[in-house]
Image 1: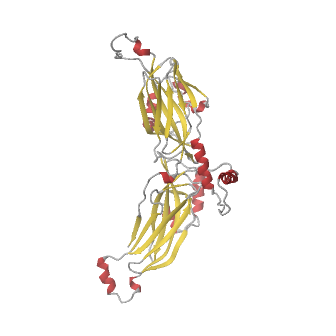
Image 2: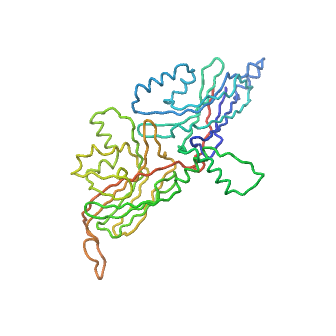
Image 3: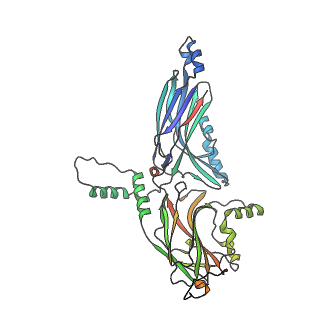
Length: 439
């Protein structure tokens, strides 16, 4: 009986970035249980107690599971690629469609193990830069696995898979930035003739570029108003964030013409299909609309929210009213929505306040493939009223009592944001040892 164990060298985090090296230790052990020790001692030949493995290989696969319909040309290309492949490829295609695969690396050939003997092999591979990140959405999934395959003599192929999480790192649009960064680092570093010059990899340049993008502060102000007047002003300090950061903004309600009673801010993930899908039945269409969430169900009762800012009009969302309900079909598609985090405040008598929305570490950053476009946005809901100071002046003595009823209106606004990946070493996700027992 042979036991195969696989464990990643990065014990604190089984998370990798595209272009990063994955390292794994693979252990093959000939296990002997106590009830088998007596039978092995009675054997005359030592070779009879040996275990023989013909070969073993390891490679990295990226799988895709989706409910989207792919074109016939894509299926033809997939079938064409299947011609000439070995039986191992058919085994590894069980979890889903293989869209990215590295070249298999042979660990050994004709391995003979004595009872209790153990052999350890080292496997390393680079995560492809052109592959998608790990993502689990409504209609599509991307996931990575290290596939370890082996075959005992006169037996079938056995496989052991080790799942890993992959984060997307944007590719540098200007490769000529590499020598510029090297020269800058040399100028800032102390001069030492005994230091050797180290070449900077493309992944390091990508991390440097990503750090600059997410650290750059460029405050933008958005004037929020509806048909009854000015509501307030929102300031967002930057538009690019990393996983684990907080989206921080400020709201200024001074000099307002319409009071904001309360507001909520939701961090939402959008899953937009990039290929046209077949028209579904009306009942299924209504069910999918109700599953989208609080957006679609509440849009009809919202009033127009006119936002004046320095960004393009496509980045702003105007809610539909009874008068503009006829134009709902021409609005931009929202896709499938998922609310990740929410913050809520009651701010009737507040002049200034702040908004803090955390970004979890387990979500997938912004990315785009040939089938889906995953985006992020801040969904605002403002509850406003024209009743200023509770509709009555402040009394000279006593307390000011709030009215029992108050006429309110609700307006919504969607502000796009971009979320990038964080350093995988900063995300704690301990991995475990994966094992396979071959009897």
